Amino acid sequence: MEFGSGCYVQGGFGGWWTAVAGPSSTPVGWLDSADAGNNGRIQGWALDAAAASTSIDVHVYIDIGTSQVRGYAVATNVSRPDVNAAYGVSGNHGFDFAIPPELLDGTQHRVDVFAIDPHGAGYPLLSGCPKYFARLPQAATLVSPAGNTYEATPVFVWNAGANAASYWVQVDDVSDPGVAVGVYKGLFNAANVCSGGRCAIAPGKGLPASVYRWNVESQNAAGKTWATARTFNVLPPSGPGLVSPSGATTNPTPAFTWNASAGATRYWLAVLDQGGNVAWQGDFYPSGCSGSICSGAPPHARG
Image (cartoon, helix red, strand yellow):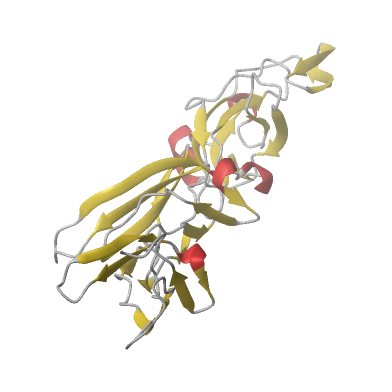
C-alpha cells in the first residue's frame, strides 16, 4: 500500500495532507440556497463516493475574487435523506451555515462552495454555484407630516429602515376619493438624507390646500419595501384679525396692525377710502410680526 503527502492552498485555506492510495473519486455536491431572510443560511450538500459514509468538509467563500473575500470551513454533518436515497449511501452529507450578521447589510454578496476531498484528489466547485444573497431592506417608519398642517412646504421625515441603501419618496394628492394624483417623487441615497437613524428631505415644493398621502420605499440590491403610508391635510391660513386703526383718527400715516394668521407666509394689505377706491395696497411678510401681532405701514399717505 502506498502513501502520499503534500500541501495545498485554496483561497486562503492551506494545510498538509496525507493519503493512502486506493479507490478515489472527485466529491460531488450542490449549493442549494444562499438565503438572507430572517435566518440567513447557506445550505447544500457534498459527498465523496469513495468514502460515502463519511462526512467531508466544504469551504464556503463569500465575495470570492474581491479584496473582501471571506472563507469558512464547514462540516457536512446535517442529515440529508434525499441525498442518501439518490446515491444509495448512509451518513450525513448536508451543510447548513449561518451567514455572519455583519454580511446581512443589504449589499449583494456572492457565495461559492468547494468540496474538500479527504484524499487530496481535488477541491471541486459545487453545482449550483455561484449564488447571491442580500437582505431585503426593512420598511421605513414615517414621522411627519401627518394630520392637519398649515405648512405648505413641508419637510418629510422618517425613521430609517435597516439595510436600506436608498429611498423612493412619493407624494400624491388624494383629495378626490379613489384617485391619486402625483405631485412629487424622487430617489435619494440614504447616506445623503439620513443621520443617526432619522431621514429627512425638504423638496421646497409649495402645496396648495388639499389632502395628500405620502410614502417611502426602502431599496437595496435585494429588493424594495414600502412603508405604511400617511396622509396629511394642508390647510389654508386662517383670516387675520384686524386690530388698528379703527374708528376716527387724525394720524395721516397710521401703522396697520393685525393678529397673525396660522400658516400665513405672506399678507396682502389693502387700504380703501370711503368710496371703495384703493388708497394703498401691498405685501407684508411674517418677518414684520412680533409674537402674535403683525404690523405694516404704507410708505406714504394718500394726499
